[in-house]
Length: 200
Image (cartoon, rainbow, N blue to C red; front, side, top):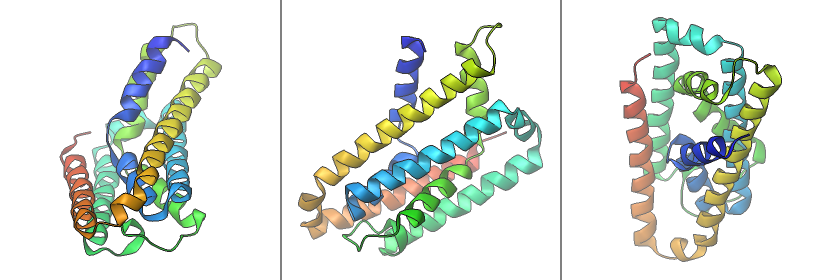
């Protein structure tokens, strides 16, 4: 993998999105363990989308307006539900200190959040070919995809470590927690609105 690919991938992964917001909120509520599993779940969804793109299904999704809209609005509805649960301080995205949740539940939520974003496989379809040559085969595509997934996990885990390291200081201040809960709720609502406005 070229340095240009790694740098571009790092920038893409650092950009705040659904996975980053989810990982941060879980790490604040559950600590580094929860943040680890949130990052893992989001990375698994990235691997799935990469497979979809590699199989050429992203082109089908891009070409089918009905399919694209169905997946998109399912994602919008889920993000709005997450925003409402966070604002109320209930469910898996309560940013108050909470009892540890099963790893499987955290992972499933991370997967579902990212699976319902139909732009991700289309992004892979447009992004990966920029770093391939006509002679490259499946192994080269797979290497790029796995590199992207590894970078995703590393960056998300870094976000989780940062959130968990300041967790005690944040949780001890009720006013800060109130504003954080509102900020996370607004972030999920904004991401849902942005997804709703996306076009195939």
